[in-house]
Structures are given as structure tokens and as C-alpha cells.
Image (tube, rainbow, N blue to C red; front, side, top):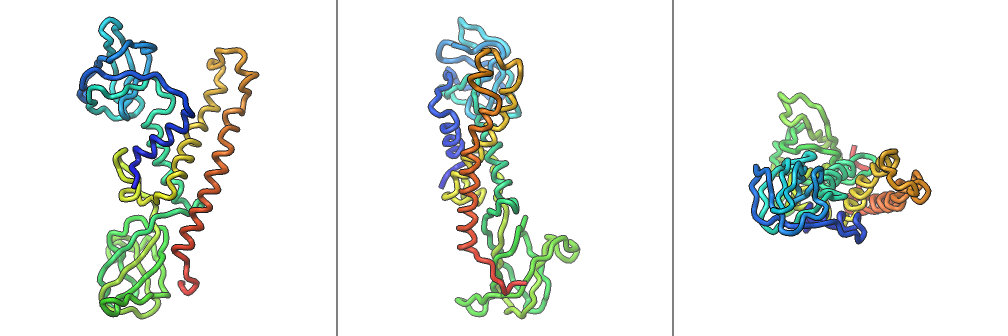
Length: 295
């Protein structure tokens, strides 16, 4: 079992490729509303205009007092969330890949992997009582359904017989079908307990502490896909930044790192992501085959 935080750390480590960013520590606990913080060590390159990252929050530095190692900061910079931070927590100075951005990239990747192009999904089950006569049945509290995998009705306490002729109906009148989704049974099914197994998109995490398997429904064996995808998403904009004329402080850079070099550096990552998605889709297809009898 892995948390989003653990995946972010792995992606961050691979993105930096051994580069050690400048670090410091906060000398004492700061509240979520504090506008100044004292660092434990010399300020180094912390200056007006620097960005500090503490946990997942970024802070913009308005002013520094070197003698007291104090920074006046703007909290919740770059769309992050202000939070309390414990004394001794590590401060990253001008982070190349902020944790909040990696979190957003992972969230976007989870949504993209559930698209029809990529074809990945989590498997959910829905248990409810069936009256034995209705041809169309409301799917209560099903949430977002990509497709149905399996329908079984209970004949005996230890015998759930498969219903092979069924279909999913969308956009049904909510006055009759509260969820807007209906299961249409085109063959007789037993009255009583019914279990529907269906494909659903991966759920979005709300915080770094969320478990990818329990909260998002993402398989542990495929976590490397999230890491590769996050790296691609974070590296792609760097080609744009690379081509800003004002970013060419070193005149040699145009020759040593020509236009397109940054973009080409993620080509192998794109191939790896494609191959891993294909492999994971094949694994799911083997685990949850589509029955030709279904209509």
C-alpha cells in the first residue's frame, strides 16, 4: 500500500536525478497565518523574491533580515494551501519541482489513465436487492460508471448465478432512476440479492496522506505509470521556458542546449509510459474479460 506522498517523493527523486536543492530548516513552529519565519541556518541564497517550500506549501519572500535569519513571507503562494509547520521542518529554497505541482500532475494522470484512449480503470461492486420482476433497475450510489463487467443474482446462499444478457443505460429519468443509471436485464434473474461489478474511473486524492489503493482505487503494481506520467507533465513546459529569450543568460547555452533538447529528453519516458499502459490494460483484460454473450 502506498500513499500519494510516497509516489510524489519517488517522482521528485527521479526528476532531480541526484541534484541536491538548497535547503534550510525553520527554527520554530509557525501557524497557518504567520507572515514571518525564522530559519535555523544562514540564509544562503534566500533573498527578496525567493520561493520557500515547507511541506507542500510555498511561500513568497518579501523581505529578509540576515542578522536574525528572518523572512517576511506571503503564505499559500502559487495556489498552495497555508498550513502550520513544526519547528525543524526542512525548507527547500526555490524548488525546481514543487510537491504541489507533482501532486497536481498525479491527479491529472489518474484522470487521463481512465480515459477510453488509455483504457485503465478500477473495479467496484454494487450489492442491492432485486424484486425479480423489473426489467430495468436503478443502480443506486454507483457514482461514475465506465462500463459493466459482470452481473450475478443469488440463487442460494453460496450460489450467485451469472446474468449474461444485460446492458447499462445512461441518462435515464431521475424521477424513476435516482442515479440516472439503469441496469437492463434481458433475461430472467432470481429475486433477492444481486451483485453488479463495474469499471469506474480512478478517484482523485484530496491530500498527500491519501492511500492510492484505498482512496483512489489505483493498483500498486502500476504506480510506476503515475511516476513516469508526472515526470512527463512536469518536464513538458520546460521547453517553453527554455525558449524564452530572457532565459538565455549564458550565450553558450543556445549551442550547447539547442531548442528541442529538453523536449527530446522525455521521448524515452513517453515510450515507457505507453508500454506500461498497454501492459496494464492487458492485465486488466485478462482479469476481467468481456463476455461475448452480453448485449
